[in-house]
Length: 405
Image (cartoon, rainbow, N blue to C red; front, side, top):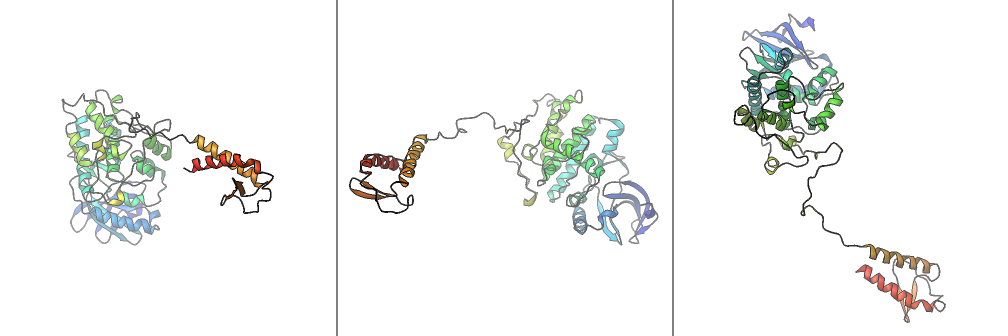
């Protein structure tokens, strides 16, 4: 895409140089010739030009993200198209991504990691309050400027991407390390999916490594669904249990076991480095159960279509962990029915036997009894020959009446 350098888009944005590229777009440094300011211009890669459904979502979601205007989000200034180019004009943040910081310096100082996470959560609070879910929170999308401020990028474009068919390995591999279990299963995404990703990002910031890795995107996604999160306290010496608990709670498998929203996680992490909380008890989730407070959590700002019903937690052996059985959990004892079953077998066996010799009409104590819908109607021609069987039939009739009762 070097041919774009030096070009002017929409007779307003002058493209100066390439800043980077990803699976979906190229990012250029540009200049707004009208407002005389530097901007970042994200131009979609050509292969998306033929996907009209994706382009419609791209325009709609990107324009929706322009309402955020938060200090911790990369503000979107303009969305447009010119001939074959579809682009977003954004705030230019001079600095580096959190991913680059981790690659260069390893685990971040705890105070810095907490400060960055708080800024991320503030951006999520703003977005979720407007019904916007990011869906692709990762350190690659967190930009840090020279003042140490965090800016979250790609609001809106992530939702558009979720509806498109993107097969680029680098795109999937870059995002799948932070994907929530419900996203990995193809389920409905909610604000708590962003909370999960924020927990994984915090895990990487304090440990310097990602919790799940494999050779393929599918294998990594399965690990998010099936494998327990490694204890971050085991990967960083001296990590306070309180901060480890924040990570474990944010990145719980079930959305119901996570924080109710960004506000709750923000309030918890504010005091995570305090001396009073350093040695608190480890956060533990009983598989298949959440306490009453957690079950009452909800996402009031998320549309009904983004509601998630979590799948039951499963142990490693594939069996659901239902906890210790209590008297209230035990099903009521069932009445033994085998005597009635035996009686039925005897009666029907006798009926089948007599069907071949004396169809349907039986003489019992001088009266004729018809058993409806069991034997076809015929004349009792063998009546005299089988008169000695009266007593047997009477006993069978008694058993039959008891079974019917």
